[in-house]
Length: 276
Image (cartoon, rainbow, N blue to C red; front, side):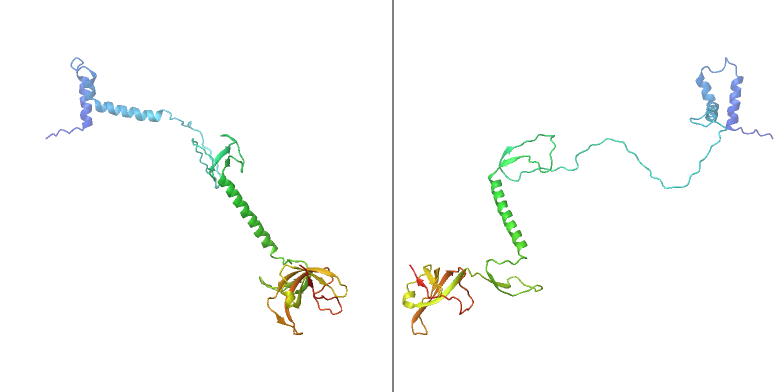
């Protein structure tokens, strides 16, 4: 028994193509569409083959000529900086902008500038007529004067100065001692004016008043010095001679002949006579 071998699709297509060639031209369907429908597989295969052949045969873009040796350059590994350059557009503005504000209320008197002018730090932009500003200036000046005085006092506080002229009667501290604020460190006596204390008869002293002028006569030289009554006691006291007296204090200008130290051989003060 003979079996007919089953043909593959490709063999069937080849056989149909051959049969189509054997058909007389007058019997073949006219036009290219029937031919493409019958042989589309062959046409597609031929187009693919042509495309592949063209890819291999045509020189590629930038292809190197055949037979050119490639040379390589060896270099040691090192660290390098990679710089990225960006090109674009943008806007720029001043880094520092300061808004000038008025500090007081008032009328603008001057404005000597224009937009675009170059100014320096401290340049006066406006002058304002303001009573508030004048008061502020006056108060600031007073504060400045007080601060200046406080500063001078603070600087001068390290120096202990005598507030009067006279004779240094005593001192209480020496170099190396530690003092505290308010501590007594010395005694200065001003002998240009002396206080003379006398016991006057109560009947005479009752007529004396504070501020009344007096004359003091020195024993021996009989020099007369001007003085002023500074105080009179209001009560009588019995003296050693059983005489009622009152204590009178007289400020006497010292021309140099009087001293506060006890000195029996020197001049001494006689009782003063008061004058109206």
